[in-house]
Length: 205
Image (cartoon, rainbow, N blue to C red; front, side, top):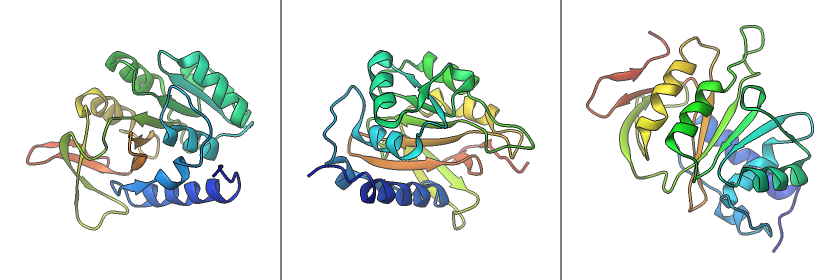
């Protein structure tokens, strides 16, 4: 079974919209991932998202030891152009990126401007498991009251995310994919606090 560039990508797009509109909700991409005939130094879900969001009109950056090979593959599949971090519309932080590289990517990611807040970077971050890690409580648009979420290595990205998202509507949207081809979204509108701890970021303060 091969990827249907129309039907399967439309399905991935709908799932991406679902994840964005319902922050913290686990969305499964395994059926679509099984149709891929591309093997690369990144997760199948990363390739699916790249094929869904990239086109010749946008740009991207890969953060990985295999940056050159993965960038070439994404360019060939989507005709999107790899660029430097501050210019990238989409940033793919792969599983082998160091904590320092991750922080630098978030620090340099563009946040748009007040006239065009949509001209910000979308971050796709590979993790081992989107259900295991530090416990957080989410609230905000798309969440009824509160929801609970655990993600790996929160300390490596949360502070940088907080800083980028302080001046709403400017900010970055983050999407996490794992080895089981599952997706979770944390758009800039989502408020996060530690489970039982102080509020770490509150966009509405």
